Length: 226
Ligand SMILES: N[C@@H](CCC(=O)N[C@@H](CS)C(=O)NCC(=O)O)C(=O)O
Image 1 (cartoon, rainbow, N blue to C red):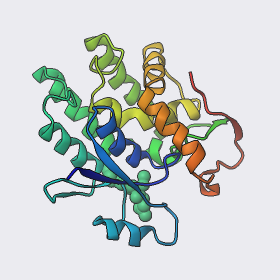
Image 2: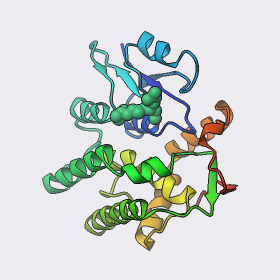
Image 3: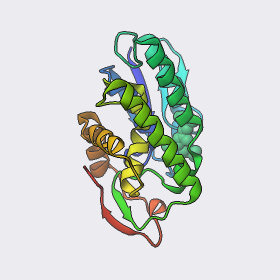
């Protein structure tokens, strides 16, 4: 028995991207199943998998069920302690856990105003004060971690923190949000990751474009691959 993971559309489901990267960025085998968010049978498909109304969901080989990306990350870090999901150094590990939790429960203005869309970038987006405040905090977290680790990822080698912030990085890029130079270099490291590129390219071929993700009054620009 292996892990089974249920995800939504790759171009649009930011929590699914996190769930999938938590396996694939660390070479943990997983069988991937899909359900269409906004499709007529979405909730039935999630229930048939064993989940409850949202993706990602995971069935563990021992019969456990994880219905939340944070639980998936913590579970895999515990089950695969040698795969580098969290930094070894206790101080960096504490910071990493806090940074992940801050993302999971926060940045609501940024997340609300700038949905993840891996197909399209938007020119002319005017961020509110609340969005700019979220972006400034993200930049601060990135700069502090990169200063301490030396990069190229937040804690040196890729870890769960990068997994949780990958859809934040793409939002910075696709909505043209302000970034410091270290954050821009970090964004490049994330978008050049082969696992990220694999996910994005699969989304471009598999997913229908969803009009619900259109940004009225903004101009479409190609997705910025730095
Ligand atoms: N807290 C959850 C959030 C999951 C979530 O909201 N997923 C979205 C897709 S990105 C979803 O399934 N939305 C469907 C709905 O809420 O109806 C997690 O971390 O996994």
